[in-house]
Image 1 (cartoon, chains in turn red, cyan):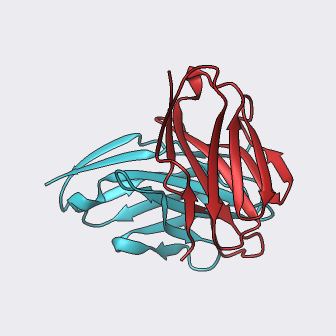
Image 2 (tube, rainbow over the protein chains, first blue to last red):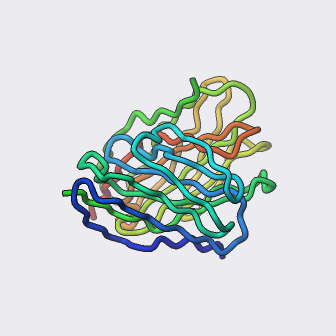
Length: 114
Length: 113
């Protein structure tokens, strides 16, 4: 079974803090993704990475950055957290060669910025 | 622009009622389609997927979906819902030459005993 884990289920931070959200997958997947999930807006792609040290902006990258130093780990960074970044953050991974497969999701991190 | 629309935002049903959740997509070219489910407090998981072939696909827990190319639709159905189907359901699409998914806004289903 594919396993995608995220470092925290719940996180509370203050405005202006630097926040790190970590994601680890154990299936040797090349692709990794960060989404945010908000009521009524569904899942929106923030960033994705298709290889170590490679990244591409998604639909809503403003205020976020990412880091992928190792294949199994993909970090989302909020350089200076703001209240409008309060959300559920989901990490996912997939293999680009598996055209009949899809993305596997982690349990999510619910971030509250005060 | 590529997009996925789910027009039912909140659906409330009694147990044993039939379910149909709408999903329409806007995509040029070949598209792969997915339904994901998120049960309360749980992670997002795949319910079913369509890549090619038979347009009627069956998924887990008695769900099925029909791909109608002429209508750009991929509606999710279940003949008789259970209380345990209470969850949020997301439709998603992926172009043939990309690994990125585009999600709809989700439909919250509540089933009452």
